[in-house]
Amino acid sequence: DATVLVTGAASGLGAACCDRLLAETGMYILATDLRDEAIRRFPWCARAGDRVTVSRMDVTSAEEVEAVVRGIPADRPLRAVVHCAGILTAAKLVGRDGPHDLDLFRRSVEVNLVGTFNVMRWACAVMRDNPPVADEARGVFISTASVAAFEGQIGQVAYAAAKGGVAAMTLPAARELGRAGIRVVSVAPGVFETPMMGEAPPAVVESLVAQAVFPKRLGRPDEFASLVLEILRNPMLNGAVIRLDGAMRMAAR
Image 1 (tube, rainbow, N blue to C red):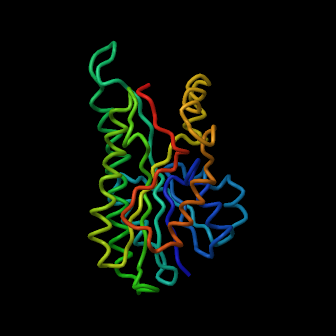
Image 2: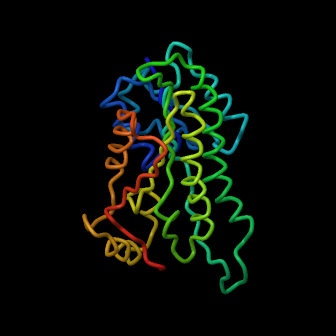
């Protein structure tokens, strides 16, 4: 009788995680997104009954995140977080019209990095008070970085900076929270079949697929969800940033 909080559950990776968690675990799902009404349209949500609670949550809001995590019932305590909420930004450092817009940079960092930190700090504060289970474990926090943290392309300076920060937080957070029985792991996906990628021109998608080693295709959200389940199940996965990219190493453009 435990709860897993999934952020960014209205599409892509987050929605796939909810579907897989419902199918393969007995956990209750707290599915959150800014577009909470979109979550309810998924078949997995409709058939889940009381195992899924849908809530609107802005990951950058201290008040909203605190209210959501503290509102989880005591008889189904928060034991895991799958943090998928994020935005994709693209702009050159110095473009034809001048330097990179500072507000766009701030927005990328605010949602992707500060949002991750905000959810992490409140969720882990709550999980710290859980009664321990096997190996004195109290919880696990799974964040979503990106291969852009390591091989950011031209136009990804803001996105790469934010996701690089997510990757960099993983080990120090795991080291600190280990004494409380909380694991911290980050997944750095390559290019996946998500609504964000669906907006890209076909030529861009073809170029990205060409950079993959094997398999020669975009990743599938269910493959991301499969790794998330393994992280939840395997207590030795901790403090790591796991690349999930088919050996892709992104070119400069």
